[in-house]
Amino acid sequence: MTGGFLALLGEVAFRLLEPWPLKVVVDAIVKPNARSQPGVLRVLLLAAIAIIVVAAFRALSSYLMTVALSLAGSRAMTRVRRDVYDHMLSLSVRYHGKAKTGDLVNRLTGDISRLTDVAVSAVVPLAGNVVTLIGMTVVMIWLDPMLALIVVAAFPVFLMTSARDGRRITSAARVQRRREGDLAGTVSESLGAITVVHAYGLEQELGNRFASNNNRSLREGAKTTRLSAGLERRTDLLIGAATAAVVFAGGSQVLSGHLTPGELIVFVTYLKGAFKPMRDMAKYTGRIAKAAASGERIVDVLTTDVDIRDLPHAKPAPRFAGHVQFDDVTAAYGAGRVALKGVTLDVPAGSTVGVVGESGAGKSTLASLLLRLQDPVSGRVLVDGHDMRDLTLASLRSQVAIVLQESVLFATDVRENIRFGSATASDEEVEHAARLARADEFIRALPDGYDSELGERGATLSGGQRQRIAIARAMLRDAPIVVLDEATAGLDGDSEREVRAALERLCADRTTFVISHDPEAVRHCDVVVRLQQGRLRAISTRTGHADVG
Ligand code: ADP
Image 1 (cartoon, rainbow, N blue to C red):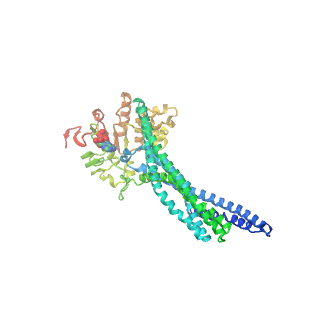
Image 2 (cartoon, helix red, strand yellow):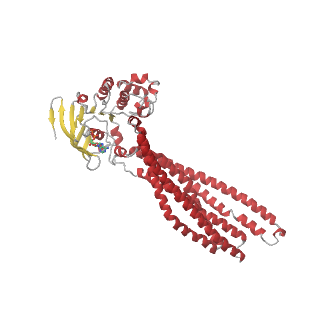
Image 3 (cartoon, protein in one colour):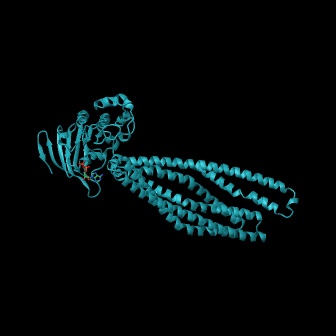
């Protein structure tokens, strides 16, 4: 930044010097009998050399300025992009449940690129122009205060005419940017569910919706272009008027001998230079406004509070035995949407708890509390007697393994996918976990074995296979607490048997929560609890049954 600004000052100085050789030449040749004056040719030659030297130094400093400032800008934005991504990852599941993925992607890629681009290609030149403007105004006042006044008077006129347009351009650009975010949201949602789109023949409907949003974005875009083109041309007219005034008044000054013809040339050249920032301002307003809208969208993400995070006093958790207690826990999604109410439950280490209940009863909410994906509104969740909120998130989550109904795999090879369970695991450990999860056999049958690349979200495998890879991943984690959220739902006979066998191994000697709507899936559990509309209704153990609540 410092180097860039020094180069910028150099550039401005040479820009100020640029018309002076011309002034010397003009003043030398318009003198009466110039041809017969001795040394006039030498003056011309020196002036010509000076023009080349000034041009060369101006080019050099301009080059250094662009490179240094662009580099600084790009580096800063690269950092911002990383920070934004880190922040997005740390935002809670609840935030992401509401946010549109495509829109977030668009902010991370589109908005940040636009901001970088504008910072480098518009803000930097504009800053240079402003410094130039100040320098030129000073020289003009020194040359002829009266003429300088005409130029200076044009600025407020410009500001008055451009303020309203500037505001309109900014608001149109903001709307356009928001529409583009919506578009990206629609696209990522529909492409993510392409099977449903094809199956229900939604192509036409989605296409129409996209087209209407797209057209609205176009209209706003056209409006910005129209407004900023209008502003630019009006600025041209203003510059024309000011130039006419200066040429007329300056010409009279030359006639009356207050100004030399060369000085008038310097003046008119400066006039052009001084008005350049105005013209650029008109030209860049649209782009800067769009970048500002982009900036707002980024700041929006960055200022979203991470609601689930380490509290200041949080300590790393010791290795858990796995004793889990829910102590009068109430959980809710926003005001009024209570998902669990006054749940109290004591789960001894190493036991298996079945959690049953109808859809919407609060089973998944219970699971999310175990991973501290959300905090209870009131009450506490304790592990081995520690309130979860007193422990650091990383140390807590590393001791809980989860297998979901739709296990999501990443678009990388099988080995990496299992290794997500524990980053430090060796290849042998990965394969051992796969064997325990009954996945080794089918993985070896894949074209590249453990190195086979999977499709996005693991789409190239069957449901049962994905599930067994997910179990291997959980196995590798070697966590004292395991959560199975409908892990066998939606599988057919054979594959369900395989998955069930793998799960049994995973859960041996660990505290396990088996969440299911299917009584069959929880038959072997030590305890089964029934949830109904967020309340704990019944607890059955192998030895008895009790209704509660
Ligand atoms: P289950 O797993 O038993 O089907 P859930 O725990 O998913 O039930 O949901 C319990 C209640 O919380 C339901 O009434 C559901 O509508 C509500 N709920 C679940 N997730 C959200 C969410 N992200 N935002 C708002 N409400 C939610």
